[in-house]
Image 1 (cartoon, one colour):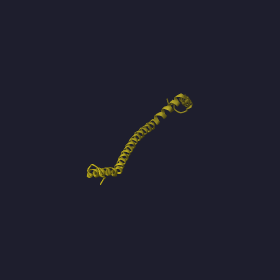
Image 2 (cartoon, helix red, strand yellow):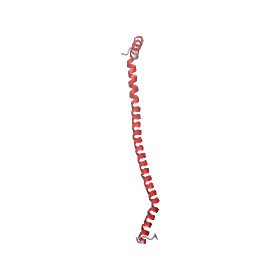
Image 3 (cartoon, helix red, strand yellow):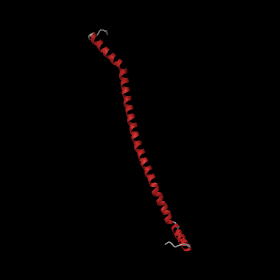
Image 4 (cartoon, one colour):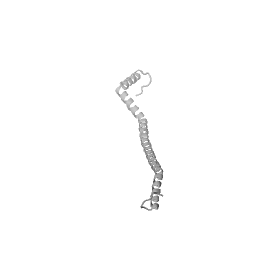
Length: 112
């Protein structure tokens, strides 16, 4: 029991035991708070990871779409460039003059 005081000894013992219990529970409460904080941080970590994966999936889909568009437009671009080059050159005129010369020098039946 505690020292002699004007307060009943049972009361002082009860208060002392309550204080000892609080001091004894403090490490467990601190560890509980640490575990709770760790669980919360881990949850945020996974939430951010999922968000990053979603953004990467959107970027990958956009890149794939752009690649497919470029693949499908290769023939169109090639045809356009080739037609443009032929139109700007003198190949059609040269071929027409060759055809005319061949028709003129041909000994066989004339095809018109």
